[in-house]
Amino acid sequence: MNLYEYEAKEILAQYGVPVPEGRSVMTAADAEAAAKELPGHKFAVKAQILAGGRGLAGGVELAPTPSKVGEIAKRMLGSRLVTVQTGAEGETVERVYVETAVDSRKDFFLAVLVDQALAQIVVLGSRNGGVDFEDRVAREPGIVETLPVNSDGSLDDTACDGFLSRLGIAGDLAAEARRIIDALVKVFRRIDATLIEINPLTLTSENTFSAIDAKVSIDNNALFRHPEFAGLASSAGGDEIEMQAQKDEINLVRLDGNIGVVVNGAGLALATQDGISDAGGKAANFMDIRTTATSLQVARGIGILLSDPNVKSILVNIHGGGMTPCDTIAEALALALAWSDRKVPVVTRLAGHNADYARQMLVDRGIPHERCDSMRDAISAAIARAA
Image 1 (spheres, rainbow, N blue to C red):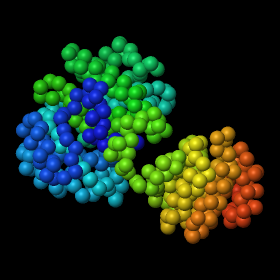
Image 2 (image 1 turned 135 degrees about the horizontal axis):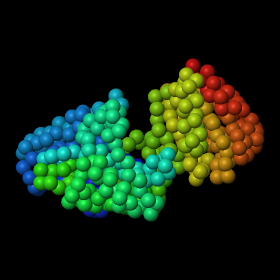
Image 3 (image 1 turned 180 degrees about the vertical axis):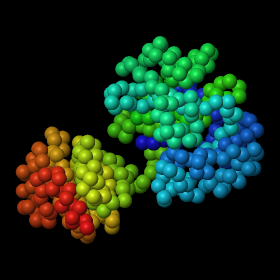
Image 4 (image 1 turned 90 degrees about the vertical axis):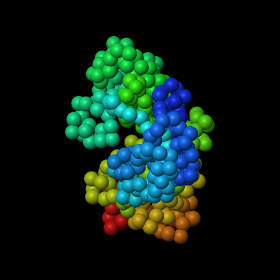
């Protein structure tokens, strides 16, 4: 689950990360009123969307007065903001964040994430933060420094000192930066985050640090441990259909292809996506059926694919395990097809736990499908049926 900026900053502030004072609002009148309550004489008005790239797309504007804040908010609210991360459709701006603007002497980049290659939490940093940071990293990947985090969440003092030195942070500022890094690692572990990013971490004209923008992503699979996040606005945001699939224990991302895929396990799902792409096809979705999903929940997930007019064929690629036997998926497929008035060609490749039983179940129930025994053949058949 990705958090809106104002939600991320609220959490980070609770752990001692310095952030500018701000207010989240949903009307222009409230935006102007919020600016009147904030300290300072200059304000930033920020569109609250879940995609990055707002600054370069007009989603962040400075205002010298509260009345100007209201004007900007009126223009932003209800508009569709298109950034490099939203796709051509963009995202509708339903709220803005009004905060005290900060004068910057220097912008840094700071992030905490899991390095999958190292199987370890790491801190990333750069002395070259700012709105075009991703473009600069693409040109000069060496501008990003890495600081490993110990398994207990601690940092090696010598390694941390070297990390900050390479960022050009020394003296009293190094002590303050170290405190911020410690806070970021603490909150990362405590809320089961997958990413915390501050870009920029600004050194202000008053020689203090301030997190001007913040991104926080939380592991969806750990949300059951965090009922405190249930009321966040971001938990209700995003694609409505994808959110419904989440409730049915299915990780679903809609894409722009014509082959609906039904897959269990993220690894197999990614391999299926790659296989379809390599064979010249285009998937209509990414799907990862969680081990806790029931046949009814999976049936609702398949129903999403059947209701998509762009889906011309469905590829069921399942490797049954102890928690998700193949017959659970076969039962779900039978239910989904019975519920739907729309029929599309179905290609199945079933392997693993209860595969033979599931194959026979589909035959006994008269489910029209094309059986394939290899993933390569199933992908080829699904592409051919979608043509």
